Length: 317
Image (cartoon, rainbow, N blue to C red):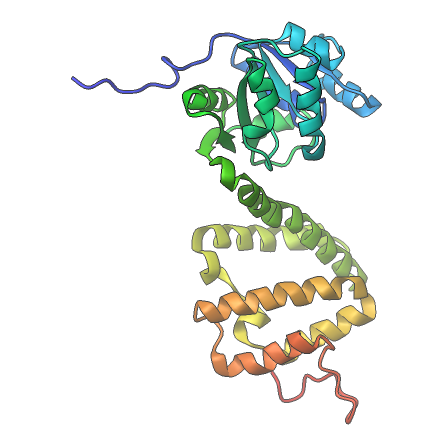
């Protein structure tokens, strides 16, 4: 009779003492989630007043101590510092003897895999890269958002099951990412999530300029439907003037953006070009309509016609 693998039993980590180095938005939320799974936060480090307040809110009664003391007290240490600070932090902790053999050292950087923890590995630590694909607010709502959240997991093969079990205990869904694919994985998430915030903020500003009193209420249903359609159907969900080949409308958009929000023109043109390329590739944009559209996007002038003084929309709709 074959044995069914049960990661929540056989590979479930023992109850661990948990420490956090870097009380930003991510670390306290993950520690609080691990606490709900039965682990015990014992120490947290934070420098700014905001990080100290966040730790006090998310991890009440957990003492604030220096990073080396966090490692002394904890079996599992969450290194939740900015990406650029991580290599130096790991090297410093290893060189000062703060890392203990057998200690689980977990970083949450999307950019790096497990190799950035090599100095700690040489000191006997067990390196794990567990990156939650989620945006964090630094408030208790983050713990709830971890339910069903995907984590990008990278670890030595012998630690893979332990890494995935920790993610499952936090309510997440482990997704294995190879070491060499971590930068591409992180770029994909940043392209989608970070740039989405910029696009939405710009759209709200433009709607306010156009006289819309509640742009968030107007955009909410529209963007929610667009996101849902895109996740379900990919490029087939494309709609709007670019996908239709409405060159005149796009030219009018560019003209208005140059007049009211010139800082948004470059982004509009770049996204419109990318949209046109994808629409063409997937047969959504008819080639005979694409020539004028691509001309407007390449010119970037909004189609201004110096001879007749029009906005360039005539004859192109």
